[in-house]
Structures are given as structure tokens and as C-alpha cells.
Figure (tube, helix red, strand yellow):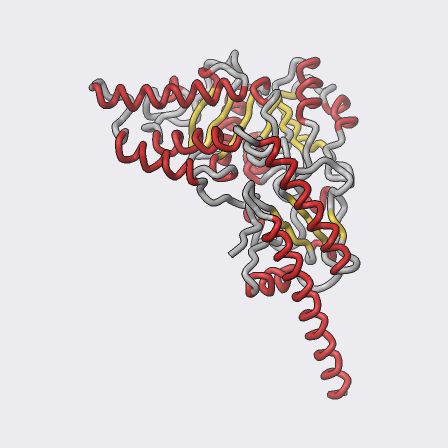
Length: 387
């Protein structure tokens, strides 16, 4: 069944699966134990950390392995709340993932300043200097790429502005890592990412913490992760995560070019097949795998159900926002009306999504469009007759 909801989670890459099984079978020992087999496990663990640090361009000591971006984002905001005075504030973009927005609001109640977003889906950095005039700003947080629209955010420019002001910068790179170039990521003061967004296992991820930071501690109970996070390290998960990144970055540029062309062709055909379809963020730089479409009519849940019957899995938007009433905060931020929000579909391909799969999805959309209109026409005739 063709799967087009990879921004929610990804299937485990074969190289990641093999690495996980191998580490679980051969190196299941506690890396903190003193005997030789544990030392062998520690050696693999240390090499994985060093490889990841080299990829990202940061010191190995700056990487803190954890259970994923949600834990990482919570840890960073909770730490900063304890570190700074009660007057400290944070600047957070309007379109951040809930795992950033909610910890920020909890740690800094009434002291979160929202960085606005343009209708294009891009954070409006022209508003940032005014926000940074407040001397109590302790952090600026801007995600690297939006999980709903796929629109790339100007995180590098934001980092430069923060550097000039001497203010720490954080980016949630969950959607960026594994899809885009890593240049500059290691320069961020704080960064969060999770493996299951790029073909690794669930329940594992990492932070990058400031090079000058010595007091960071996300949870108590041991001296693991250089004292930054207690708990026996998940070596199989970490080894699998690193294996996924190694595989993806071997040929990422060609993958990006090929998949972007396939995605663009899909969008062009979709807008022809279903007149009135609008693509959010199509005038901005986007992740090469993501289409965020406003369908001309019919509830998005009906589209999802009908496409699912035809063997194609798409989403109504962020999996973390499913079940909530009203449009997502991302759609509200870019000015999408409630009536349009009910017709939103998010389609997110994989690194290996074939042209045949994209073409098949186009054909399924055309079938569903005809079916829904046919059903609508029949319902209208029934109402006329009953009247």
C-alpha cells in the first residue's frame, strides 16, 4: 500500500533495521559496565556519537542522546527556565510543533513572544529585531522546516541575527534532518531531532546543546550522557539512527532532485485533474517530499477514507494535532480560513517513492473526485425529489 504520510513517521530503513538487530544481538550490554563486552559496546556507541558530530559539525560532547524531539524540546525549555530569572522571555515562531510551543508556554507562562509568519508560510524575520530589543530574551526558537506545509524556514539567517545580539538560538530539525543538507546545523546553540522522521526507530533522538553549557541536565538518576541525561543508553536505537543517516546522506542530493521532480509533476497533474485545488507554500522553498493541498470541496476526512480504500495513505495534516477541533495553529498563522482548513490534505513522500506510486496517487485522486461528485449529485437529486 503506497504510503504518503512520511512527515508523521517513516518506515524503518533496511540499513537501520539491520543495525538495530545486530546491536541488539551482539552488543546488548550496558555501556557503563566495566568488563570487555561492555567496553566493545561502548566503543560502538562512542563511534556513533563521533560520526554524528562530524556530520553535523559540532563537538561530540555537545550531543545528548534521548528518546526523541519531544523529550529534547521539553528538556531545553525546562532547563532554560531554571537557569534564568523569573523575568526571562523566549521568542518562538507561531508555527512551531506542539512539542516546542507547549513546553515554552509551560516553562515561561506569559513570557513567550510569538514570531509572526507570512502568508507564504515563512517566518517573518523583519519582526525579530523589535522582539529582541527586550533585554530579558533568553532564547529564540525557529524550526528548520514546518511539519505540515513543508515550507523551509530561514533558520540560518535567524541564527545570524541571534549571534549578533548574543542570544542563544534553538531549532527543531526533526523534518529537516535526513532530507536537506546539514550545513550550519552544528552551529546552533540548541537543536533537537528524532530518528523516526528519517527512517530510524521510534523512541530515540538527540539534542545539540550549547558548547559553553555545563549545567544542562534533562533528568536525574545517573551520570549517563556526560551527566546531561540519566538512564542507560539505548545503543541499538542510537546505532540504528546513525545507520539511517549514513544511508540517506550517501546520495541525498540526487534523491532530492529526483523526488522533487516527481512531487512537482504530481502537483501539476493534481491541479489539472481536480480544478480549484490550491497548494499551500508553492511559492516558497519546501521540503522535496511535501504537498499541502486545499481541495476545492468535500471534507478532508472523506478524501482520506476514499484514497485509503484505493490503497493510498495520506493525511489531513499534523498527526500530533489529529482530533483537535478547528484548524491547526499553523493554518491559523498563515491565514487559512476554517472552511478551507476542513479541506486540507498533507501528502508526504519517501526517499524511495517511485514515479509509479506518485502517478498511481494521481489516478486515485481523479477517481475519488469523480466518485465524490457523483455521490453529491445523487444526494442533491434525492433532496429535490423529497421536497
